Image (cartoon, rainbow, N blue to C red; front, side, top):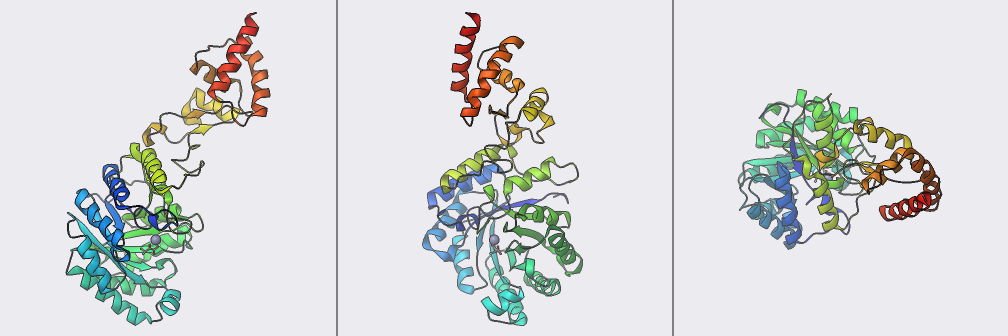
Length: 388
Ligand code: KIV
Ligand code: ZN
């Protein structure tokens, strides 16, 4: 695999499903997993098997369904969790156990009521225990974003020795700034002995709206895997959005990274997950929102009609959207009206356009949007009047 290849670890079915009211049944999870495989993700985090019999079953069924991506099951650093995850993953072609523990002072003192040394021992013990079941062990240092770098490096060094193949550095609370998160990854790359044997992974939450920026800062500083979800769904303000990081890597000339994602499926995947989970996508959501390729102001519409790239940095077809939308509102200009009129069969002369535009603006001031039916009525009645 080339150095610039970034692995996409999709956790829609685990961290994403932690959104209140988003619970999926096994059939729905299997359907999404099948589509994630077609999308080209490298890892599917299928669930947290010990958490419920339903989640156990879902992980099991996903293992039987997909063959290309690794299938991953989450555990705490607890033997019972690991036993159950290993059992759920036993039919997977490429099983991965994802185990870990909190490493920040606040987690160690208040949640785990322990000490740094004891947590380090538990981390190592969990990885060794999981290693008896599968080769591929991902270790997460929960709240790594707020963990002291020196201690974090010690923990990671120890878990690599114990057999961890992937090291997840979660910014669990979404607190890090991009440069801070990037520097953390750089520090680990430079200070953890044996780091070349493992893959560093980003796992960023969006509490301050920085999940995508932090993940990109992570890969710019040496991480090779991004953990993310479709539509950015997940705990609280969500996780890094898959479609955003993938399109940033694809579009940005300043970056030189590759993924295996079939970007033409992104819009479809967004709608599928939104519909199955019952969570609408905000209209202004980057890449997949309903307005991501819609233009409503006259200045923009004029530009896009003349050359799409004047106001679009992504070709909508590349993410599976039919075409850019020219939306008719009271902010639209003559160019947009003529363009939409032509699309419904009216090639207006300049004089006709000038006359109809006056009535169009009156109508648009009354309505939020002039749709195709409104437009047809306006054009047919007005043209009859002009001709008469
Ligand atoms: O945000 C987080 O720290 C997590 C871990 C369980 C990986 O989701
Ligand atoms: Zn998380």
